[in-house]
Length: 181
Image (cartoon, rainbow, N blue to C red; front, top):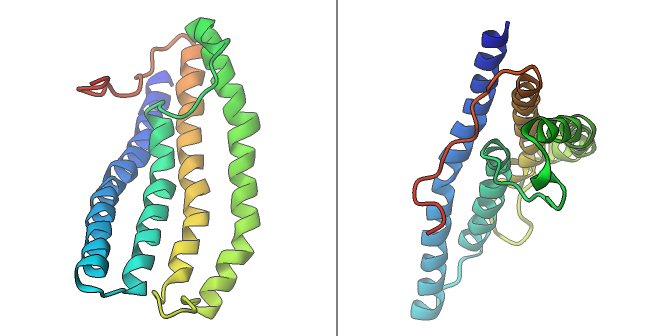
């Protein structure tokens, strides 16, 4: 049973890790796009609203798609005045309870409160009013993808911390070569 739970934990975390690592390429596109906007505007006096809006889309996509990955890697912001002094079992309890009573309800509320907003945008095929990109509804869809990805990772976290409490040794977030440079 423990091995099966561990496999599920790895699959769920693997999915959010794949999405997060894939979305990292958006950072490169964002930088290249910003350089292009600056060169066009200040080098050639050319402004392009659609190109500038594409940077907003990339920026939003990068963060909304990488949040679950950040949680998977245990790199999220944590106020650990007391947490750092807890045993691994105490930390597992804090993380499990925080996931159950804070993260999952916030994910559910975000999804529920965004649903009509996103559906309305899709229904209207909402586009930028000022000549920008015609895909505002795609950007707004991230408001549903974000809590869905976080929920997947929350389930992985519940399994990971639950396994810790059961005495199993689930895998820790991956080490980062070159960290701290």
